[in-house]
Length: 469
Image 1 (spheres, helix red, strand yellow):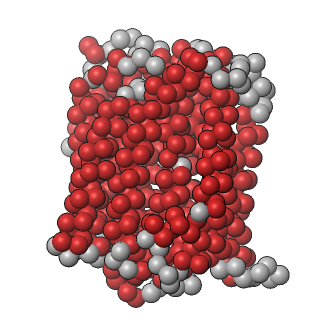
Image 2 (tube, one colour):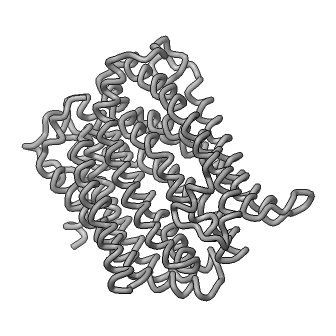
Image 3 (spheres, helix red, strand yellow):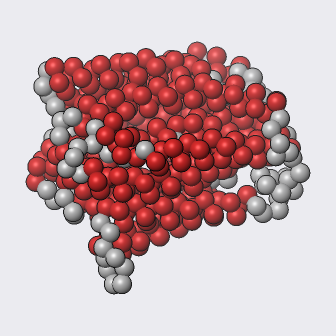
């Protein structure tokens, strides 16, 4: 039994000798290379989620309304970052491909021009968002009982998004290049700072004012700025053959670079738009259930997102290795890395399910001790355990497709699953069948399963191997 298990994890099983186009490393070497990118990328996302978790946990002590004030900003924040996330997918795929091809000039031109493009988009967008925070939150479903505190929190979050968008773009470039460790280090520093500032600013420790929910927003803004500065320092160092702003490549927009970013990022933008539309609608339905269900939902969603970022790290590693392998004209190695990601993703799903089912009640009480919120959140743990598997695996296979530049296909199934099926199923289960929050989470599980099936089917077709970017 153990020998069969070891063989299933071996490179000889994942990539038989007859399917190889050249030399392939040992099983240990391939896993080591994959994890070298995956674990810092995983911890990067995890650190960002921990930042939100700390906000929720510390604010949770102030009551359900305070918890809802922080949680309601989640979807507007993701919508505002929609363009940046789409651009980041394109940046990772293109830089990974150029790095694999040895095109240092092209790689650095993409870095510089994407940073410039990001600022041109986000400075006016964030100014507009800042001036209309209350309208945005009311549209999302915020109630009068907590709208004032939500607006104060939201204003500081909007400011922080300028730094977060820059960090996202630079982080995407570093992922494509294969240097994810520096991203992790920057986020560790930022999260430690965020925790310390939260402690002092939310509760008014020492000579600091007691700002409550607003204090969590101030902490996030400052820590986001620090992370951005640390990443800026990384790409400002002199590296003749590396990823750096000091390379003599052009800052001025070039038609070829913009066309490639549009070619890959345009479909990613569609994917992000459909996903945000579906998630926004989903959140609005949940918000209509009331402050207590909304608070319970955000606690469970935050727990789910912690393990989601483990899977996202695998997706980032898959995107980086896929792009670089296709740049080297080695689709066979890209397939091997995809198989490695799927095996690790399955393991992540198992661990997630065990933690949710076995220890979820203790984790929920870390966020809040309000009895109604705790009981409602605990009732969802079984569904969360089931959803962990398709969530992990769909990220792995979607990462391969993104690394290959096959983003149009992802956009199509995102439209179907997230923007159409998920809101409809959520409304039917939550409102029509009166299942409440349980219905919303059953809908989430169905959506993740559909996306996994779609991504896996595309991967198995092999069409992604022939994309040119």
